Image 1 (tube, one colour):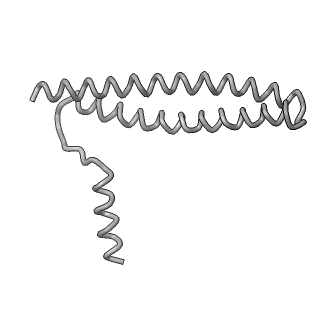
Image 2 (tube, helix red, strand yellow):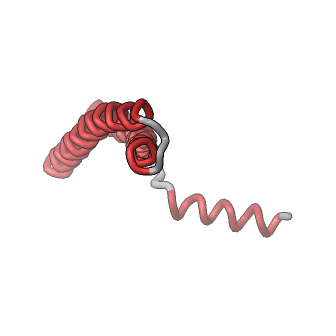
Image 3 (cartoon, one colour):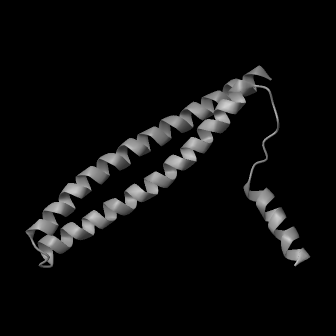
Length: 110
């Protein structure tokens, strides 16, 4: 048991960056935005799943005899989920650029 605890602790340090304590508000903001970007990525994965499900629903409705209602619902959900995915994708990209700009500003100050 003790060996597995040691290994998991080492593995955890390899995958997680340890934040140092600082009084710089820019570091706190970069950390908060990084966490927000991670939450948005979860919603993005859900949006991709909805997009795939709506494609399957539309295909089933129009090609496999599922009915016209299922096909139309698949198209409507597909359009909505595509719009959601695009908004999230743009937001994540802009958030990453913002965090990188903050980190570059921090490196310039030091």
